[in-house]
Image (cartoon, rainbow, N blue to C red; front, top):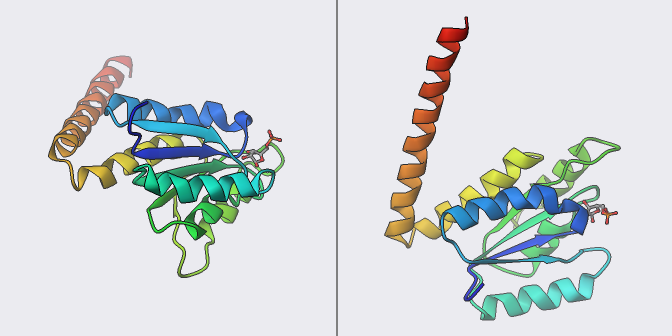
Length: 166
Ligand code: RP5
């Protein structure tokens, strides 16, 4: 994509099914992004070099998804003053609680906006990114309003539907 505004990083390609939820949101809102596999543990030097360069190429914010001892979002945040949104990936051994705590328990001074575990969290990561960008983009802000209105309508439709089923 040309001139990406959001960098979406994941610790492994095994995180991709969850990360795709965030991609879908950014695509729906027409926000240009780029996505990469980059690991805080397995390729730490590549990660730091990427984050430092990304600021120069116009990346406004980062989304980082990782599982287990999930340090990706925290390490990204340590190397940038741009906003960082963390997605804790659901894991087999501990259900993602490991990822959640590793991502959310940042020391004071280096914030990571940590989402819920799993697909809903990834969707919210996309939406939060759009909300941050919408602060300086009125057409994006209008799209967010539309999105919320659509959501209300969907809930009303669901309510109507269950009335016929009960
Ligand atoms: C983390 O380790 C990744 O973010 C992934 O969630 C987890 C497992 O990675 P793989 O063993 O599937 O490559 O760094």
